[in-house]
Structures are given as C-alpha cells and as structure tokens.
Length: 278
Image (cartoon, rainbow, N blue to C red; front, side):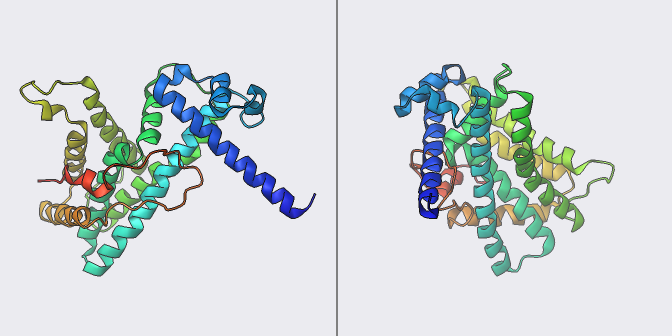
C-alpha cells in the first residue's frame, strides 16, 4: 500500500468518524440520550450497524467521544478568544491588576454565552452531566477527565494569576482547583435556572434569566475574592468595549471535531451585548 493510499484511507476514516459523531449529536438533540443507539446512528448515516462498532466499541465509548469533541470545541474557542483580547489588552497597555480582571470577566462572558455560540456541544455536556443514569463506563470516563481538567485549568490559571498580581486577595489555604470548580459550577448552576420555564407574563421573569444570573454571580465571586471595586469596574467597561467591537469572541476557522451543524444566527458579540454588566 502506498503512502498516498494510506493517507486517503486515514482521511476517509476521520471524515466518517466526524459523520458518526454528528449523527449521534443530532439524535440526542431530537430524541435525548435515551434515543441514542448504535442502530439509530447507523440508520442516520446509511451504513451497517457493524460499521459503527469499528469506530466505537460501545454506546459508552461513543458518548465519551462526543464529550471529548464538545470539550475540545469549547477549549478551542477559549484559546482563540484569549488571543483576541490579549491583543486588545496589550494595545491598551492596561495595568496588571485591571488586565487580570479583564481576563476573568472576559472568560466569564464567554462561558455564559457558550450555549449560544456552540449550542449543541453545550447542550450535550449539560445533558450528560444532568442525566442520572450511569451512561459511560469507568474506563471511558477516564478518557474524558484529562481534557475536562484542561478546560477547568484555563480558569484556574487566570484566577491564580489575578491573585499573584493583587487583583484578588485569596488565602493560600484555599485550593486553586477548588476555586476554579466553584467558579465553573456556580456559573453552570445559574445557567440552569432558565430551565424552570417562567412564563413571560409573570411579574419578574428577568429574575429567572440564567445568563444574566450567571454573569451577576461571576461578578459577586470576584468581589468576594477581593477584587478592587474601581479596577473591577474598569475591567467591566473594557470587556463591554470588546463585546461591542467584536473583539471578545474568536472562533477557530478550522476545528477537527467541531460538532456545530448550523451557523449562529447572530454574531457572538451580538449575543453577548444583551448581557453587558451595568
């Protein structure tokens, strides 16, 4: 077999792997995790069910692959976006404290808007996290954990850096990993408040706006962690400007395992502009 033939076969396998993940994502989006079966995926892509097992040995392995793809897409967006706002921070020559708070405020906005920017990936992760059934085996979960920790470590590093430059005042006894988990868990929990389905004719429906609550919670955490109020206000103003000038969110033009099948109807900055901190 020639090298060119091997290359084509690998490309075909990667393409088919993507098609299978995409089919599984579509099934979950319409029928829930319960509707995901190997036969359903095979029917969706028009192949024999045995073909699916040459890529994923079980439904558990397929779900783990979906989680990995979703997490990687979020990491790619965080990384690309950080490059964008770092250029703006450098150009503005911000002082270290304000710059550190800008990064934390910025990543909070992106985390909150992830459900709009990468709707299927975010919904998939939320669904798998909130579903009580033990859907994946221990070995398959172990495949996902390192990448999930990598995503969490992005936040941990920003919190630790802010603490080191005096933008936050955190006790050394408090684990930096614990702080990052509380940050991510708190924001994620606030986002779920939208699921209570408050009707528009209720007296205060904005009180149950998960995205607004999540951003407010992120601000509360920064204040409680000792962020100087004047510097935090300056950071919020700077991030608001990044949003309005479309410099806050950057998407990778090419992503190996991006599961998004539809384009976002609004630009990420338009989505975020509804939640500018006042």
